[in-house]
Length: 225
Ligand code: DC
Image 1 (tube, rainbow, N blue to C red):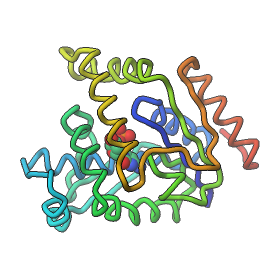
Image 2 (tube, rainbow, N blue to C red):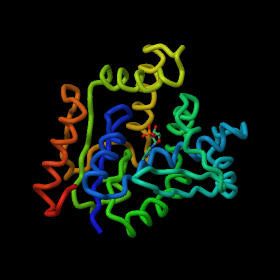
Image 3 (cartoon, rainbow, N blue to C red):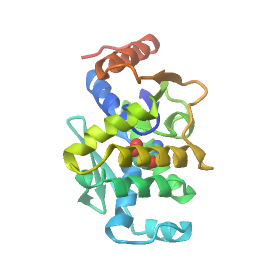
């Protein structure tokens, strides 16, 4: 099986780029952020305190996360309920950033992620894919962009769902999450030693996809659609 790891901060374009690449390569695109978000959604929906790791660890016993793929689209299930459309709010984003610093949560999701990679050719995106989840991935990328461009992209996405949201709120949320993700003790966001680092602030979406595809083809030999 072939695995490609794409890590990077929020708004770096990793999920949409991964999806597009997966289509071209006929791989499965695994958005691991959605898994952390699914656990966060459990706490949000049931109004359960997620500040203490002991509580979170206990709650994990009541949580089953499942992932399914259909036509290159990923669907996440929380205790058999399809929650794919419910996990993108700002509240869920902040909770996911907080709970993802807890070892019990990372351990809980590690085998799920690795099992998907065992069965499929994949492009997996997240924060620690190249460093922890798939240290032997065939090609690794670390995508980044300036905080302003990342906040602008995220703002444009969120405006469709939340017309009252302000650029400042999104920018603040992105900065807080970046800080949490980069400074946590376990599996912090950082490039793997062998990752190709790509700052795409000045690249269009299509240019970014072409650049990454070119790099993948330089390292792996196969047909694309
Ligand atoms: O990529 P995203 O914004 O959907 O991720 C949501 C949160 O999940 C993010 O703040 C950090 C966490 N996350 C993580 O810690 N490790 C991953 N591999 C993916 C996401």
